[in-house]
Each structure stands twice: as structure tokens, then as C-alpha cells.
Image (cartoon, rainbow, N blue to C red; front, side, top):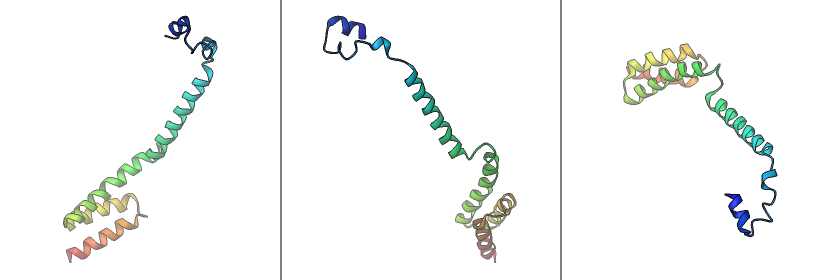
Length: 106
């Protein structure tokens, strides 16, 4: 494509007179930098490989418990938050929801 433009003698010739000599090295550095940025963002959103299974195990019972609580089904809410607390005993919201569900049961 550039050969055609250079042969025709358009105004591009002074700008691209050495286009064959442009090194590929800076472009490869940009590609490596972009790949590194993508990898860092992926690890940030996934939480790292050691945390993935932990988040998956905690998230399912917690979010199911919230769904049951919002639907007014308090017995399965208590069961799901018992499971969520078993996975992560520091989750204060799970204790709060479980207490509210127990209050709703009477």
C-alpha cells in the first residue's frame, strides 16, 4: 500500500521516506505493557487465584439468603445465613439478616 503511494509521488513521500526502517521494537513494548495492564485488572476483579473459591463459597448462601429474606421466606433465610456465617464468621450483615429472619419467625 505504501509502495503505491510512494511511487505516485504524493505529499506523503517526505513523511514516509524511511517507513521500512521504522523499528518494530516500540510497538512490541506497547503490546507487552497492554497485556500486563489487562492481567493486573483481571486479577483485581477476580480477587486472585487463592480467593476465587472462597468468594464463590461465601457468595452463594449469602445472596440466596438475601433473596429469601426479601421474599419473606424466613426459614430458608436462616438456613442460608447459617451457611454463610459458617464460611465467613466475620460477615456482620449475615448475622443481621439471620437475626431479622429469626424475629420474623417469631
